[in-house]
Image 1 (cartoon, one colour):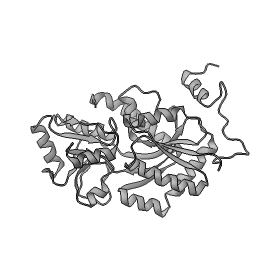
Image 2: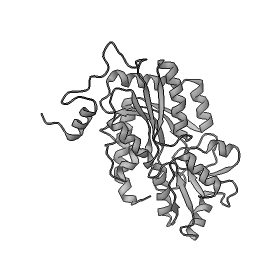
Image 3: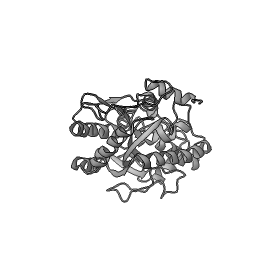
Image 4: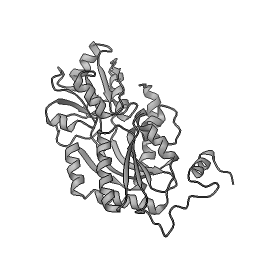
Length: 324
């Protein structure tokens, strides 16, 4: 029987050759209190995804009575962590925050050392995140239309960013500018927290990111439009990219993924933990603070959705001819 190169790499990473990974023994079921769970985050500390994973790590420490650590490795729109996850031992003890950018967008814009469908086991989705475009409260633009009209009249003078370069919001916003004939200057940052500081400091004039809630609540920023197709909870007057007729409006999901080849026992444990945490008061409190929408999918549904989005994005991205 012939073994594909990708399969051989996966088997080697699991510490075997020519045989499937057997996972934990019956005497050491998943999760074991003697082993550390590592949760990887491809973005800088302080951002929306990082905040969610740190809350989840606290929840799992209590639930599983084991050590859970969070490792931030920002850069390249989360693809560094995705590449590390693809090579990780598939025993369930190394997982990562799964977001739209590195798993459904970046693979169609650049050459990466992983296959977004074949190299991962998507364990569960828990959230759809609001990712609006916003400006400082004292900016002259009161609507998305006003911002775009100014940008079109001032080519190259609008400096903007997103929480993840070459991510879904980067593509959707650049597509909107491109369709309107706007020349704007994209400025990359390591994560949403850095980009927020740049916006408030005047280095950029517009930002698309999930880290807006405390700044909007304090009146420091003004929301002009939501990049996804659904309204932001608590902000009914903010239009969506879909309502504005922009070419792309992609829901931004948050979930947990592991490497391909994880044992079923570990997959079930992660699925159950994810489903149960949706009913935690602390989870609902976080939804309110971060303006997210709880949206659970189990491993089967989440994996199927990722594959479907990848098919669609694979057709769309080349047509847009976007760059950073």
